[in-house]
Amino acid sequence: MKQVKGMKKYSALFLLVVLLNSTSKAQPINQSATATESLSRTAVTALQSLGWAVTAIFYPGAEIANPAAPAPLPLAAAKAEAAPVKGAAQAVVNAGATAYTQTLASGPQTLIPGRGFRNPVSKSLKGQTTGDQKIDGLIVSAASYHGIEPLLLYSVMCQESAFNGQAVSPKGASGLMQLMPATAARFGVTNIFDPQQNIYAGARYLRFLLDMFDGDVNLALAGYNAGENAVKRYGNAVPPYPETINYVRKIRRRYLDLSSMSD
Image 1 (cartoon, one colour):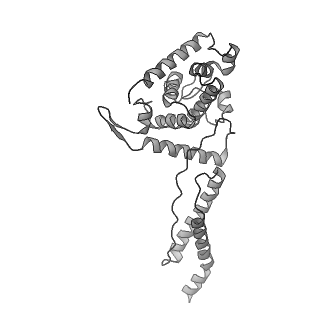
Image 2: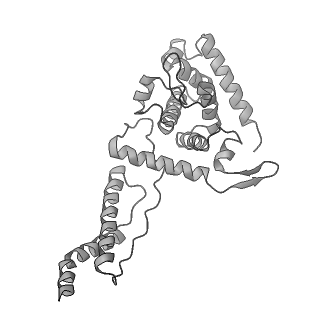
């Protein structure tokens, strides 16, 4: 009799679990769902997991199918004109970009005669590396998302920080892409030393400059170093500052040299 009463006591919970399970099956996750919807579904999944655990304890013989895991989040980084997302939604954005970067870095490898095995990241960078596989992956994913050549972003980072994520210039520029505090805030960066935020914001700014100067790489690089207003002030030309002239020359030469390398 006690066992029967126990069964009745948890019958409502069992029905709730079954209902949640069937609802999840009836409404598969759409990969284009917004960050907010993804968070809601995460909450439902957590509740389902709790239900399955309780069911396993009180209904050992019951069979409740575990719905298929949702597909990996697509790369979710803010577009150039989009407002930055914060809080819980930012966590989803970060998770999506991180998962995408890890997928790139661990993707299928290709045997290159005389060069060993190369994954998609190594191939995109033509064998170049920052010395950190995670940073390499972030360069490729951020550049690809913003429509920039990965080797250009790599060349800018090399000149800016020599791949030192903790670098701080005398003028206050910080991180791998040497973002000024105002530029970091402008593009929604909350932690300037976070490699992912720093690289994505740097790529986003470079894309902004390329669009502003009609794809002229020299002017975009000059704008990255001296600011877009300085480039405009001199009639859309590289400002006559020795530092900026040298900056553009070095990055342009490195970028062209690496781009000319065979795959």
